[in-house]
Image 1: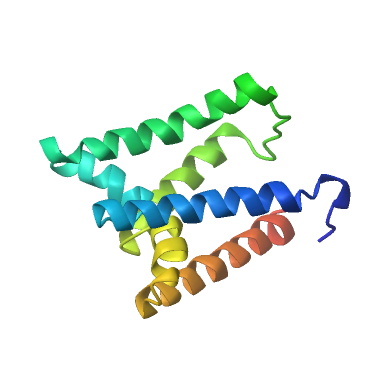
Image 2: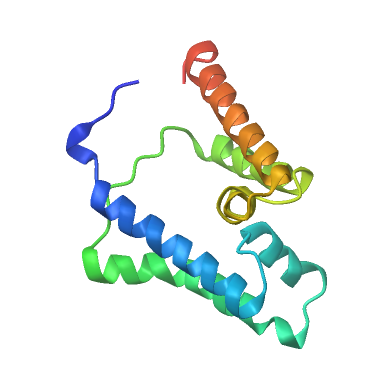
Amino acid sequence: MIINWEQFTPWASFIGGAIIGLSASLLILINGRVAGISGIVGGLLTSPKKQDVWRYFFIAGLLLSPVLYKLMAGSPSVHYPSNGLVLIVAGLLVGFGSRLGSGCTSGHGICGLSRLSRRSLVATLIFMATAAITVYIARHLFGG
C-alpha cells in the first residue's frame, strides 16, 4: 500500500473525529442513546414512535451535511473504483453484517469501544479483520 502524502489531511481528520466524538457523547448524555446508525434507522423502520423525532433529525443531519459541504467548499473529486452493481451488493452485505453483528461500526467502533464494551471490541475486531480479508481478496485474487 502506498500512502499519498499530498492528500493526507491530519487536521481535517482530527477535527472531523472530534466532532463525531462530541456528537456521540452529546447523544448519549442528553438522550441516553448510542449513536449507532443501524439502530437509529432500524428504530424508524420497525416501530416509529412520536418520541423518536430525534431519529429524524439525526438522519436529516447525515443527509444534509454533504449538501452543506458542497455549498461551502464545492464538490470533491470522487472516483468509484468499481461498478454500480458491485457497490449495491457491497452495501447490502454491509447491511446484513450490521444486522448479524447487532450493530454497525459507528455503534460498536465509536460508542461501544468508548464505553469499554467487550462485545463491541470483539465486533470491531471482526469488522476490521473482515475488511482486511475482503480487500485482499478483491485486490489480489480478483485483480480489482
